[in-house]
Image (tube, rainbow over all chains, first blue to last red; front, side, top):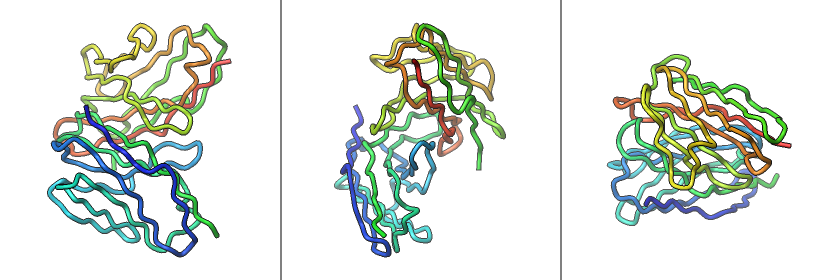
Length: 112
Length: 115
């Protein structure tokens, strides 16, 4: 079955860049997502990338995809205290009717 | 973007009672809805996939008689936790999608505490 893995914890200083990494095993993944979950809250879709793309940038967020190595990363520039949360990567095959498989989540702690 | 709501947002119940959680797609018709469960400090685990008008497909290890799922319309799916026990306490999240849509949309989640 599909497997998505992330490091559990990342600590950065405010103003620095954060890089959260993710590896996945399903080569048929078409969409790869990054979600943010703040304490006690639901999931917030941050961004997603198609598997035929290498990079996607959206304001402070940069997603890099290495399809050969099945490696996905999320870079947050100028990290703020409000970015402190758990970040989940997830993969999905084509179509909104396909299930999403989530990674284990990375807890990002931003130190003022 | 498309909006998915869940009700209630949190619920506390006594052990042995049943709890129903609703998942609604507010501005689109969802042919497929998914129910996930999140344990504390853990990732989301898919419980079941429900397609409108048909029986839900449960993931391995999920008791279908314990977690009853009904997807009676294109905008509503319900998850009923029957005879709830403290180990059922968790964060339950639904998502909704349809075949021609690329992404799914997640609800805000329902926190269940069984005493």
